[in-house]
Amino acid sequence: MVKIPIAIVGAGGMGGRHLRALGALYESGMANVELAAVCDTREENAIHLANNAEEMLGSRPEVFTSMETMKKMRPDIEAVDITTDSGSHHLVAEMAFDLGYNVLCEKPLSLTIRGCNRVIDAWKRSGKVLSVGEQERRDPMCRLNKAVLDAGAIGDPYSFLLGSARGGNDIIIWPWRHYKNIGGIFVDAGVHAVDQMMYYLGDIEEVYAVSKVWEPKRYKGEKIGVANFYEHWANEVPDEIDADAEDMVISTLKYKSGAVGQWTSMFAAHGETTEYGMIYGSKGSMAPAKQRRGAPLTLTIDGVGQVSGDEVLELVPDFHLDELPARLFGADRLGSYDTPFEDADRFLVALEYYELGQCIADGTKPEVDAYVGRKDLAVCNAALESSVLGRAVTVEEIENEETAQYEASINAHWNI
Image 1 (cartoon, rainbow, N blue to C red):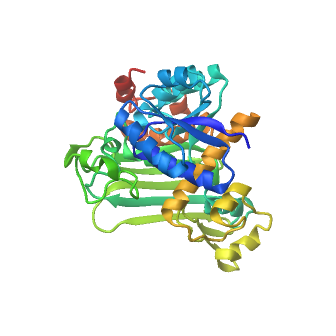
Image 2: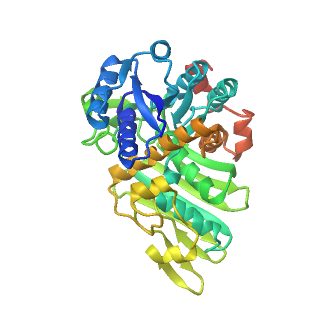
Image 3: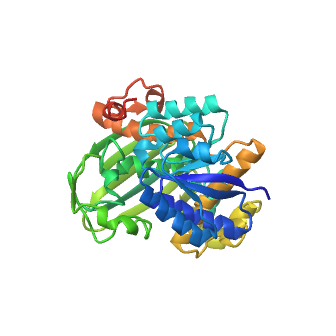
């Protein structure tokens, strides 16, 4: 199999997370990309990731501190995987396309629609591949959720109730996720939730929401980051930060299908944490399985009762995973799995890498392209805009930049 040379751009915690995914792809025997270089403006970060790559992959990628230099020194590299902080994604992606690279970009594509559109313009000019990192839908259990819904097991979907509350006043994952103009935890995590909601029930067209910043002071907790991806930099996290990104957003969502959703995203919850999800339809309900957990989904069907685990597979006899996810997770038909979180996480990103290689090799389109990524962001920003304006906001208004009061300070910060 021909392996396409790629580079990771951004060698912090997320870069290390993606490196583990490359390790999983290598181990699968289906690797169609290979890591040739690591690029980060902080050379020590790039060296750290290159050292880890040598140990994990068996060969050491070259280290660069600029994509321009990398392009000159390694013109054979065909694609970059952008794993910088969320606020800079649009700048790095635009530059990458102008340098002639194919791009896999971590979500969100930008923090504003204007930033997304700059990336889309550069992508169109380049004629290259653009894939946005929305890996959660690729989980075997999420694929099963979708297959069961499409099979009509609960009838026509009426409503999707989704929510979580946790966080207290701790710094969540990393400080920049509490700064509106360069991150924001609601958007950073929210685009994943939106992608799931629209993957299952179709496009959201209108949002009414209220948002708050309950914890303007955040403190370094006992745990930094997700799993142990960020431990190398734990000492760089200050004991206290001033936060200005929303840490609670409660939304009512109207789908184009006519379904109505309720979405609560709270990262300032003290006391008991909660997480819930339920889809109601004309014939029953589904508690969808969560990504990277492996626990089964549960259906409650009128006249039948509860159906869960492997019994769900009987409702979708034609459901099968593709070859690579079947190799990674152990079977092509799964009602549940017991893969640890860290492995499930790297397997899902490995699927993104593999798809990138396929798209470059045969000209196919990625499942999550620029327009899907932009719409995921638009729903999040419609909620934030709604809170500012005190009215319902359509996703079309956001995508067309007909209203962008919330985004204004972010565009000004990045001069876009």
